Image 1: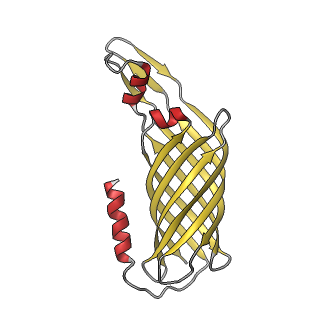
Image 2 (image 1 turned 90 degrees about the horizontal axis):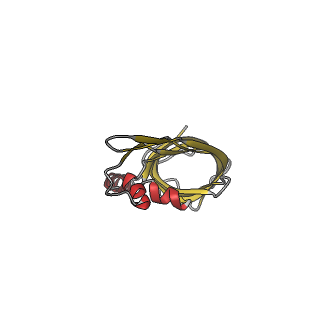
Image 3 (image 1 turned 90 degrees about the vertical axis):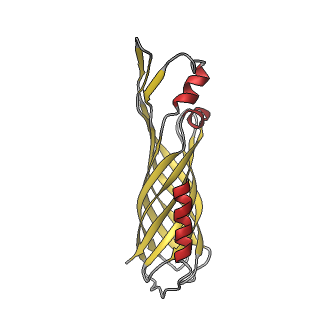
Length: 205
């Protein structure tokens, strides 16, 4: 989190310099940040704050409206302490291996710029829909004498992600951006939700 905070401050600092940007409809993005698991409750309880990475492309049909497509990967580490505590085995000399969870989304949608000035910060709203895959790796619980392995699992579902962000101009064809979303995968028993926050670079061609 400290790294993310410093990076955002650095991006804001670069925005104090004014550049003459040329408008171009085609753009490509690369970004990374942190992701928070929120639902189901077991997902929030037994997996920790993770990281994300994404690549994407956009095509502006107007100054304010951009068609977007992106591939996003989120990974969450298994929280051994909380898992054993919930089972009542926190002092039983057990430990776990594996259990990491991941969420992959391939989505497309629309980005709407609330301000369209070329040389100033531009807040925006974004909404995308598409493919969602949540996976967990196998978990091995063991002590000094024996071990038990629980198999991993995966499920595909329809995804919806909505959020907001801000573009920060930095050059004739480069913007930095800060973006937060709420994501939901409509998995069978209960929907899976998470909150990714990321910073990245948007290159216009």
